[in-house]
Length: 294
Image (cartoon, rainbow, N blue to C red; front, top):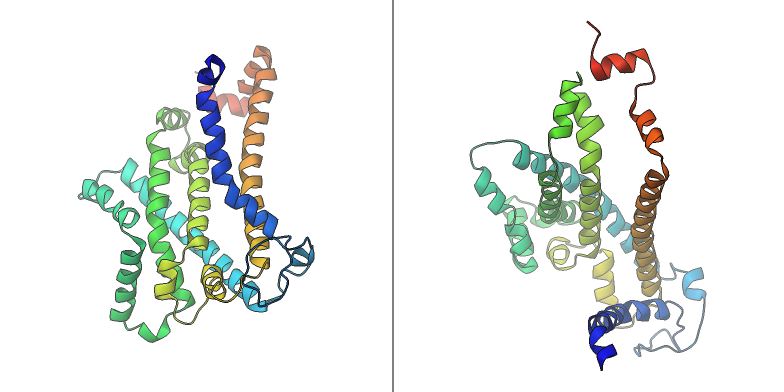
């Protein structure tokens, strides 16, 4: 009992992780499953096969929907990241009339249910005379609209945690505002921008409710999955899910490995190496760092 009490938190954590990852393991397992017939509605493992991986586009409409979702996700990520980053800088670094109200309004798209957000955007498109033109571009606009808040919140949190002492030091060393931004500010904020971009792509690629209300006759990958689930579920869907999972894991693991490598390399440096790395190597660098000699 003493051993159990000392490890109860660890055991509960492992059980929660196992419970969380069971659906993921099922998706990976089903990507190697062979259905007994094309019309089978029984979703269980029948026999092992590699045909699903060798022929992922057995249903061409699935690959078309997947390609469309990736295109919309990338464009929505680009638009939301650019606009959200600019808005985040404005909310943190500048004072203007209505700043407090804007900070509150930013959370409304995140707090509103998706059905409300989707129907509101549909009403906007209809009032603008686009009722008969719903499709790729209306989906893109809708995705940028609801991803924007997540980008602003992420970038703003990153900026709020940064001190302006490095920027002030760069200005003291005769750096122009443009040089200060690209050499100091942007590299420090870049991890937050990258995290916001990945979050935006995930939200855009996965969205169904808002997309369904503003898609018209256009079909994205989540809408395709919903449509075919009423008849039969192609096992190639699990292949797409497994690939997306592997890409996400590789991105996270790659970033963590890179961060650990940099920390390990910094620890291996001797104090003399660190001082030599910080010291100017040329007369020009000396003028930039300490200014011209009197």
